[in-house]
Image 1 (cartoon, protein in one colour):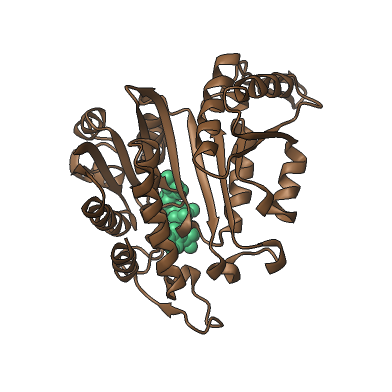
Image 2 (cartoon, helix red, strand yellow):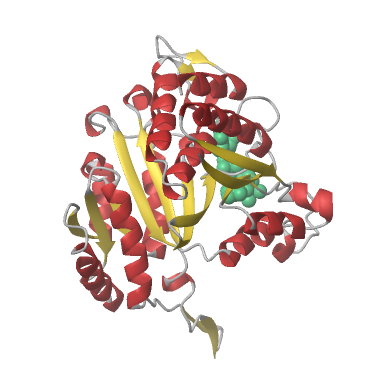
Length: 368
Ligand code: NAD
């Protein structure tokens, strides 16, 4: 039987509540499929500061290093001690540190809008087809956010010149392209590569390299699209997309645009992947949203983003595609049965029933 080690870092706010439901669903999935996970929980964020004086305690980091993947909740509480410097606050001290420590270069953000949640989507119903299912793959460590030089020069007379540099190398593009093509092979086998090859040198290289990498994946249909058109097409005809591959900044923007389609942050999981060794890809799995302090501790949070993060972990770190698909199907079943947390509830739906975090987790675990 396959066995995996998972570090579960629930963090702050709604983190512990939604993590509990995710672990519940993971345990139900283990019973149906031939694998086990050794889950070790550890504090991070303000919980880390309270327990060990640091947002990412040394023991938590050590646990992560010994694990096959990290299942993360979220960190940060805006109202806690404003005197703590930015670098020590959880968002930076925990999240950025983990990204760097584990070389997480690929960010995967699936956006799924089941037909039953058509009302939660800001797009007109006729644009939603039979439901929307897009995976945005974003390069996470290169491009304009990290390129050098990066500075602001004082030109005198109250004028300044700000410089950011967009840089990509062939290997950086190759490795993210492989991630995207492999993900497409597990889905509907279509990849749309986003660039700005009509204006940017980076875009020309991006398009060349992605096209070359694509030759290794003849079963995946590759198309190229300029980023401005991509932004527009997401609103006009989102059902045309399967996997969208983007460099860092374009992916930052388009993944949020795509996320709006899903109607609630509580529905959106994400994966950040590092290098693959011995067939095992180290990954960091978390909901796209934050700690939602406004609803924390009230059994109101939607646990689906955290539960779908488990599905991503099974697929991308452990290669358990059937088990991952079973969780995704179970989420759909629970929604189709009318279960709605507050964020996806609409009084206009005839068969919808408002449920709490725990009840939604129970419904999904039962459906697995
Ligand atoms: P947020 O995502 O926590 O909340 C925004 C809105 O979405 C709120 O109304 C919240 O109730 C709702 N929401 C979010 N997740 C939900 C869920 N699962 N179910 C139902 N509703 C949900 O963003 P914010 O309020 O800007 O940030 C709060 C804190 O979270 C801040 O300290 C911020 O820095 C932190 N944050 C952390 C992460 C992370 O850990 N990766 C990401 C984003 C924000």
